[in-house]
Amino acid sequence: MSCYRTHQHSRVLVLNWGLTMQFEYHPDFVEQAVFLASRLDAGRECELHAFVDRLYAIPDAELKDRAFREAYAERFTQWRLGAALAGAIDEWKAPAGRITRCVVIPASRKSNQNVDLLVKPTTESEMQRTLLLQVRPQSLFEPAALRTWLHRELQHVSDMLDEDFGYDPSDLDGAVWERNVQRDRYSVLWRIYVAGRLIREGRYDDRELAALRTAFRRAFTHQGVAPSGEVFDCLLGRERLTHAQLVGWAKRPESLLGDEYPAQVDEVESQLLGGEDVASECQTIVGV
Image (cartoon, rainbow, N blue to C red; front, top):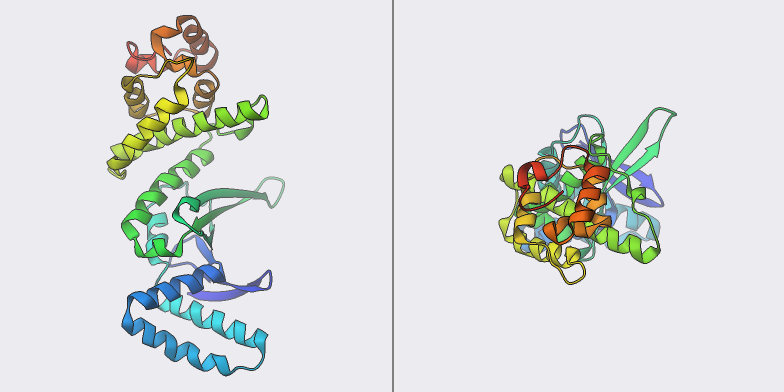
């Protein structure tokens, strides 16, 4: 089922793919996806030309633009170009009913792809949560890579929704440069936590681990001392971590350097982690 809705002077394609989540596609994303699909399939290219070539004769520019957008939207729907993306999201173990709307906009390159969670109060007690996907249209034709990327990004969103995880970006403080450094460290730790769970579920590309190890070593080398590979493996194997733990390690990188900083390790353990800490599984590797 599909429909069109006016939004900021453009026509947004709205689909649900038989799911509870509603998908809204930016018209530029739809047009680029249809164009790419036609270039990859001669039959589709002929079909597209049969629909749009006659539209050039429309004299009114606004009506012509609308006709083109609707023609591209119809091809996008009938060719099921968004099915791979919707299928990957359907595999996501999101809390039921927490997110019912997904907005898809185009990314200019792969490095710009991003997933974000937008929260807007609707009443005093209710929130509207929207999943914002910035995706290259080319990614629709690389379903395996798209699925791997989405699984990873959506796990971050699941953590944001998990009250036990306790996500709160305001916990990073200090001067601007300090917050930037803390944010980089936190991001690496969060990626490790996500990767470990996806690995155990068989949904992670192991080829990405080498880059993640390098990022961890770079982010947590402190006063010339680098964390060991065993520390990385220990964090990767943890089934449960919290935002507070990640923030604590991001602020105190020495706490992941074992015996190099024993006093600080004890302090971080007592202040941040209480009685339950990484030492319960990795006592001889990480002293926190």
